[in-house]
Amino acid sequence: MSREAYAERARLALFVTGFGWRTLRARAMAHPFFPWRVSAIPVPARLLIAPHELRTGDPTRATEIYSGRFAFAGKIVMAEGRSPFDIPHPSREWGEVLLSFSWLRHLRAADTTISRANARALVSDWIATRGHRNPVAARPEVAARRLISWLSQAPLVLQDADKAFHNRFIRSLTTQVRYLKGVGSDARDGYPRLISAIALCLAGLCMADQARLLRFAQKRLVEELDRQVLPDGGHISRNPRTLIELLLDLLPLRQAFHARHMPPPPALLNAIDRIMPMLRFFRHGDGTFAHFNGMGPTPADSLATALAYDDARGSPVANAPHSGYQRLEAGGTVMIADTGRPPPISVSSDAHAGSLSFELSSGRNRLVINCGTPESNRDSWRTAARQTAAHSTAAIEDTSSCRFVGDGAVTRLCGTPVIEGPAEIGVDRFEHEGAQIVRASHDGYRRRFGLVHQRAWRLSLDGRRLDGEDVFQPASEEAQGGSRAGSFTIRFHLHPSVTASRISDGPMVLLALPGGERWVFSAPNAEVEIEESVFLAASGGPRRCEQIVVTGQIQTMPRLVWTFMRAEASQL
Image (cartoon, rainbow, N blue to C red; front, top):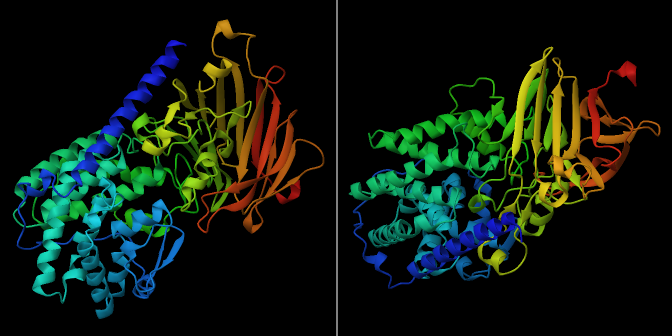
């Protein structure tokens, strides 16, 4: 076994051991007799403030919940007089939403006597059934979201409430704070661990007499923000969706500090200031986010809310080297590319094998896409969505540039992190005669095939032409002429609104966009086909689309050039 294989196994063993230990510890702390229940956190007499909820509420959902219809994460459950907390969960995602109480915002949006009474009844039911003992409810990230929801919706729940309910609510809230304080550091790395720190900070600000808790929570928050929010504003997981979710949590936290007349930690303000420009970085002309590393449908309302707090409102940054992304923009044409390494193994459960993939849009029309991740039923699509073939990039011998943990005990315990992927990434960005050029390479195929994939993009000054080049070269001089790979496949997935048709029998494809706009794809001297694909990140669920597929033999065609060019009506 090679030294690299030993190192890979060692990293995986260390990750699994640590993950398993944290999981066991969190489960032990959920036991009713664990010492955290007698923590020094006192039961407050009252709540001082309620954080502002930035996520949109839908009053029509309040009517559904009142009627016993719980529609979460693509699944619908009819309670039919039963407690929703006693009903088996139809999916993991459904259970997480139910037990996070994030749906309370819909009841508050209705703002009726019935919705307030319904909110109290459901919260009281959860307290009476000791819902915190549910394994899903005990997960730190679910407990944190529930704590934030209860604090944010306290005016809804406590208005018109009697003293007995008020006392039960406050006691349960305190119990959950004590639990989260004990297990927050054991949450999964990345957003779950950060949201746990945010929830504790909010609790320290909202609950009376919690100065000690607030000091503890601020320290943890600062540590996680400094570690997880990268210098260019990206998140350590490289998932663009995480940036939106983070802002929707960090902005109310900043407001809560101001409401208590306390200075927010500088790390909090700096994190918000760094993240804001990255929201514009990932946006196409139609306002949607590019689909990389777990990004699903763009939550338009949430994104609009977050952007409303952006004071800069300038042009997006073009180079995000710490996050591993590049953006080219000219004449209304936008190209966004993944030029980074896989994230650390501890935060890679949603990462994709999409190195050197890109998306292309013209005005408000998306042209080239990655398949993305669906909003619901993610588990059934997870394997396919993460493969290199689901991205607009090159694959060698129909394999992915990353390897993930396969099925088995490790997957059941800690998901499917990336255990092998590109280690060396080269990126060079410059301009030539007004055109913007990015050259990048990755060695994700070095161990298996002894090859390095290089890709270049050149966007013309007027944005009417994107030239590309893919090169497959030996990873070292020793590998010269000894490649173990025979074929490559380059895919360009097309948005469902784009219609592709062949131009004669040559290597050219006409692309018809909404509004009459036309583009032409060409790859001289290559074998070009139009095949079916699927756009997983569509807002209404997966949709059929098409893809341009270019294939060839590496030995005879180690270099391929291709072009997307906007066509004039006179040229067709």
